[in-house]
Image 1 (cartoon, rainbow, N blue to C red):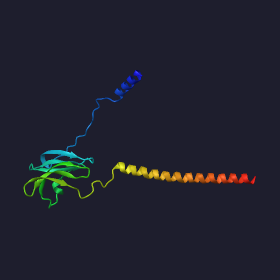
Image 2 (image 1 turned 90 degrees about the vertical axis):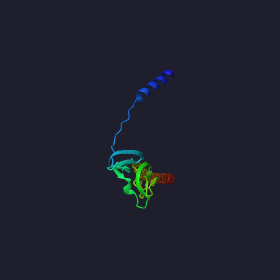
Image 3 (image 1 turned 30 degrees about the vertical axis):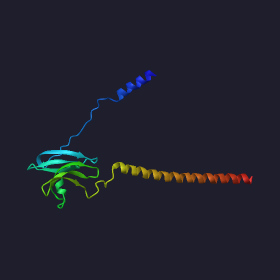
Image 4 (image 1 turned 60 degrees about the vertical axis):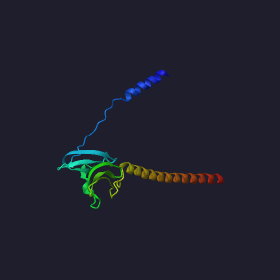
Length: 169
């Protein structure tokens, strides 16, 4: 018994190296013409939020999505009560962004920016795959039921034929 446990332990040690290195790809998100940018949050869709400086070194909140950095001030409604958004600090999977900005009264306040369109409108590939599997399964089940019903009818017809031939004897 001890030899088996020892052998399994050695196989496990060889099969699962403890010093596996993770590899990463670095993406420079850029700035708005300034010299500094900083990322603060990321969601499951890979959208990144943070702050980046403009050419006059003013910090602006940004959203980086699909390879494009967007100044969140360009999405700011005119009646929002904010002069400009300084930094975005987090983003959730619904695309809602939180951060802080300068209000029209000169204070720095927190903001919540909620997209008016559903950012989850396109189904995830896994959802489409599961839908496809479900449709194929239902079609297969329907075919199987029809095949079974045909076989059952054939068996009934065969049984009736045999019983009729037995009664005529």
